[in-house]
Length: 398
Image 1 (tube, rainbow, N blue to C red):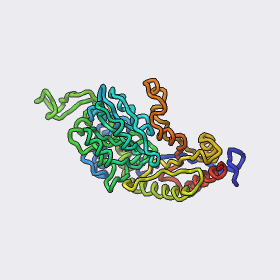
Image 2: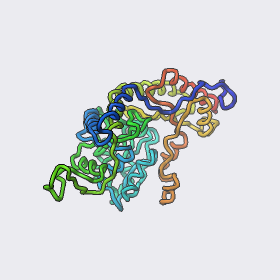
Image 3: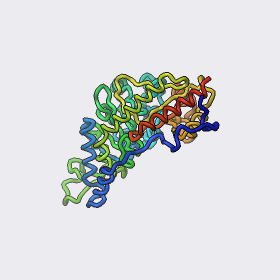
Image 4: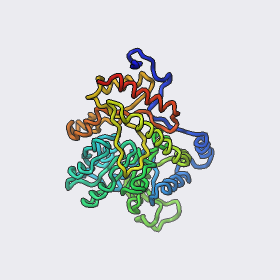
């Protein structure tokens, strides 16, 4: 039996591999450089082009690109009319922005529990959380797997709720053959560096609803319009004239970020295919490893995974999650935890949220760990990661 490096054994690799990493090509750099040498570096044609690229890819009627996935969620809540006294249902196993966006609007986040096998929000739990104050559901495609969109759509239609899909992890995923981005009332993407495609930072909101689109455009750009049809005081004196007709924010994406996104989108099929190859290899390798539970994928979701999450069955191991995590780091395979339940954070605790709210989420959280997954991984990187996981699971097995 191999001894873990943390206990004096030999690490499985000499150099550190991280859980995620961007892949920026020379073509990407050239695309950004071209914009930086040109006349427009913000509010220019590349932003519009990026929006058209996302529309063509997903099949959605409208796209609005913004400066982050968090901004995308905030804009979606604004367009949905979320405000003081409203409630917004979401999952606790997510980045904090999925809930914070409701707070930005003066609303209360309400946390529904997760399915203990898929780790996505449980539609039955959503239904139990609905009150006469509920305005919207923000369902997160955790790790890139699509939520049970048909069931959530039916619940939202029954109660007159807005369905917002937090697809920060899931660009490239299909649900029942349709791309994420073309399913919910509004869908929010993130283009952070470790996501499937990157703009450095950045995000987007996709919708098929013309009214939501108008509100999203206003929300991300100061509430200002040049469209006479929307103005209160038109006609006006000249083309220079504009009006602020609602309260908005400066959430605009720059043209050089948009250029990077467009260039990255040229390779999204390659990125998705490689991610699927790695996931398939991991699933095969970990299927029968004692102490390791792999995430269940629903058949409706043709998943492009942003994260690969193993779950430690701590009842079958002699170590804690922290000890396993540190041992992986000593093997030079750096992992991450996605995520601490949002309502466990001190800020939410001070708002009155308490532990015990979502038992499935809290139980799953105790054992989850994200291992390396990104398209530029070599076959050796993949096999070294598998070796590290199986080496430790075997050593610490009861």
